[in-house]
Length: 158
Image 1 (cartoon, rainbow, N blue to C red):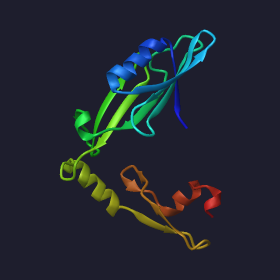
Image 2: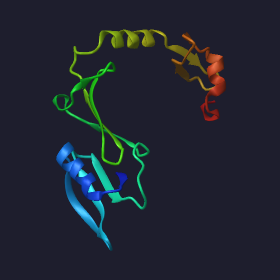
Image 3: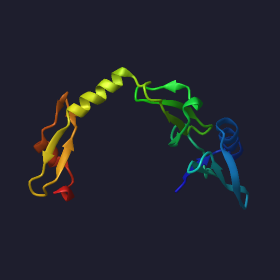
């Protein structure tokens, strides 16, 4: 399944994705009034279908697209062990490229939070099914009690 974007100016959007972000345009489907659909491709499985919007597009009400990237392609290290580039296309759709940070370059504060979360995991055994579900939900700095958590889980879990 491909993500489909509706854009106000098809030419401007395609130029932005192709020239600005390195996508290719392998094919176009013509329509009665010009181009009806453009297929854009960056890497394998990074496809976009771009279509003319039926009416005006309001910037910022579109969608957020996330793509994998290579570490050297993106400039900003995050606290959650990635490096990202976040930008917006001419129609206000947010595009995020994310690359894993190399081992050894993680933020110490984030690593400590992950360690604390792993230590705070509570087993919540279900005596009826014999399954043990893991609860890491924190409420007000305290772990939620298994019984309270069980009340909110879907009925199919038993």
